[in-house]
Length: 172
Image 1 (tube, rainbow, N blue to C red):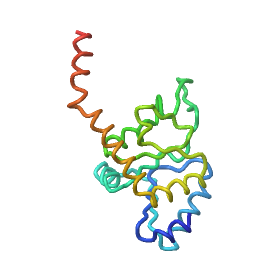
Image 2 (image 1 turned 135 degrees about the horizontal axis):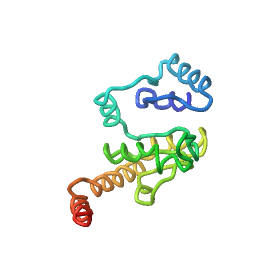
Image 3 (image 1 turned 180 degrees about the vertical axis):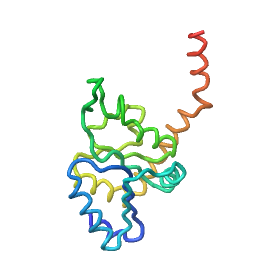
Image 4 (image 1 turned 60 degrees about the vertical axis):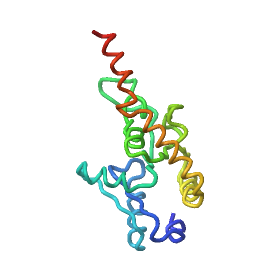
């Protein structure tokens, strides 16, 4: 990742939000190394106020979230929890709400409605290569951006209102 920062110095910011999973110490060491080299890498484990979180997503070109996926979640009351389906769906909502392309691990389930603006990766080298490709390939980045803007418009309250009203009418 260091070579990527050197190539795009001043044009690349990585903003890690939330607790790291997996090899926590190694990840923090890598973040600190990049920071100590003067690269724009931020890591915040504490709660971020909504306005600050939203401003970060609005300023982003791409959302990479989550970095790690477990197929099932240990839960004391439920054994059927799946990341991206029953919990951990925030990345999809953030991508739609802020109209930003999404990059997720291959294990993260991506509904076909969202595939047009989502890229996947299977390891850190793949993620690095994918991000470099998106930095260098303006047309692909613009294609993803156009797709997420269309998807965001399709799920707007104005477009969904008739569907919501018919569901409510059926219930009444």
